[in-house]
Amino acid sequence: MLYLLALLIGVVAGLRAMTAPAVVSWGSYLGWLPVAGTWANFMGHWIAVGIFTILAIVELIADHLPSTPSRKVPQQFSARIITGAFSGAVIGAAAGATIGGLIAGAIGAVIGTLGGAEARSRLAAAFGKDPPAAFIEDAVAIIAGLLIVAAVA
Image (tube, rainbow, N blue to C red; front, top):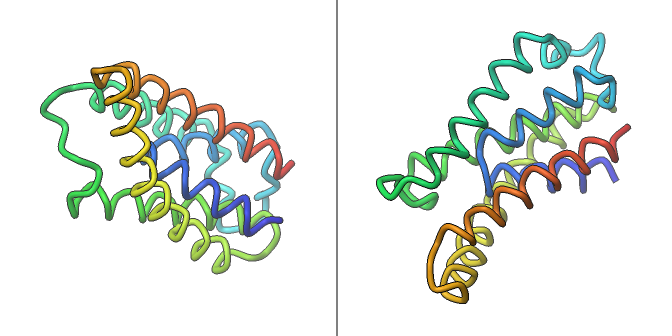
């Protein structure tokens, strides 16, 4: 079950790169992720929560700009894999399975990046414009991230 949750948080990173570490940090801060005494203990500190929350908000805003590059360009794709792997590793750390969580999170990020791009493209075509599709994707990433982290608790 833990590996599935790590995979799913990776999918969230594929949708929104910084949402995954933000919700994992909030989960650590709120005590939903028992990472005290692990390498991931810092994720529950208010400074980490603040930094990741600000980065997630900036990303949510930037994603709606027409100049934002595709998530499938190498820089965007690799950032999603890194944040997915990191977030999966934090979830894994809650049960002493950091490496397994890291791998599952990276795989999930690839799935989320490619699947999210396809889903958003289809939604945008259905709406005839991108903004509604982008807002739906934002909501899915945030809600799914919170549900995943809560499921670990």
